[in-house]
Image (cartoon, rainbow, N blue to C red; front, side):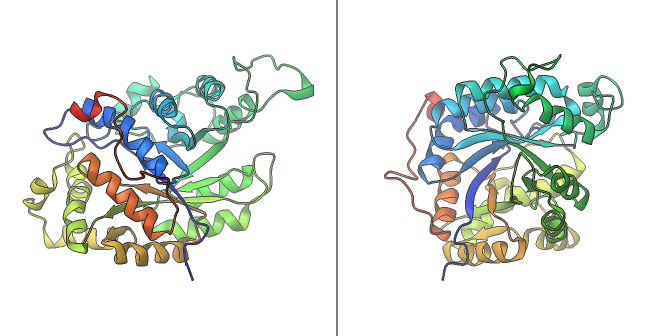
Length: 354
């Protein structure tokens, strides 16, 4: 029996930027990575908003979504997410309604309430100390949903999105706590939980979402996507070696948020204290790191523990080929059928030589 039957696989990408590698290269490699992941049968590809964090190349999700939608044809492409307090809801609605015109029924809008950066950056984004909106986050989200719902027989509202949405653009709520789960449930939205950031709260948040869910015009039944750090390789030892930069980043980022991801060789030389090792062991125990057999077991454990309908795999692995191999091994562990030539890089641009 396949314990992961029916589990959708998707990607949550932060576009990791590596020490000694130009950020532009990480961005251009997306044009090769996304089509390769699509051929592996993945359902959606999301990009997370970050600002003033040099290790992440995802400061402009709508721009990147347009680029990836152009080089793919079946995957849903979206944000995981747009940090709504940084933006005016009306502008976000215009951006995603426009994306949907060019890529109908393939665009997702995941939104969150975090700043996507440290306090000084949040102030620069919002121009004042508070959100770019007079109301709270719930009010912003409700306003956004109104803009992205077709007018129908009621006629055009006084302030409408141009171009007007021809169909509702799916809006997801992202979160790391029971409060975000409750809001998603109350509004009848699909919910994405950031297990890779707060694994200790996963079960409680998912359970609350399912318990409190109210059917809506957006969604008839509760639907949950849960993220996880995924690093897969030929052996457990190789996977742990490749996961070294992620683990060091969890520690180093608390000290210096402006640092880049270290390469695996550089991470192996980083001197972790016993306290740091203990923290990392606890944080990464629920994640999916290992060789094929370990990945298969941890994937089944992940499904049993979270009850997720979908896994959002975030895999900041050094090297394009190694990243694709991680996604291929994960798909194989889930028993997911792949297209012919899946797992091979078919250069879309000059990314491979950049």
